[in-house]
Length: 125
Figure (cartoon, rainbow, N blue to C red):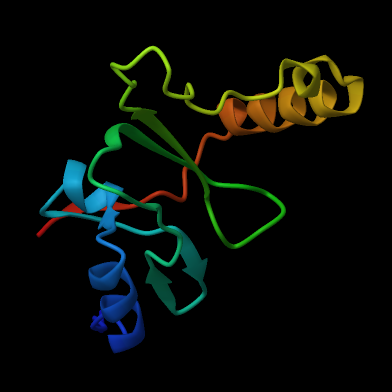
């Protein structure tokens, strides 16, 4: 399978903003694909973060409605030590109370856990 180098624009952006690819931080040599086409696979979908944010876990889930995997990322945020410093952002809990959000999330999780033939491919290299 053909491999492609990162575009120079992406390299410049990540270097200038001091951003790191969280998946590569966690898995320096593992090859994983997030985009699946009939004749190709690529890891197009990524998270880039500042080094003060620590990636803990990446998960990839094939989705029935896209040729891109759903990606989740668990991170550890740096907490301020100064009590006057503003605390990190937190997800609005009201989002999780929304019935449509709950239904769609539940359906997606149920569909993915029932998928017998995962489209996520791993190889060493």
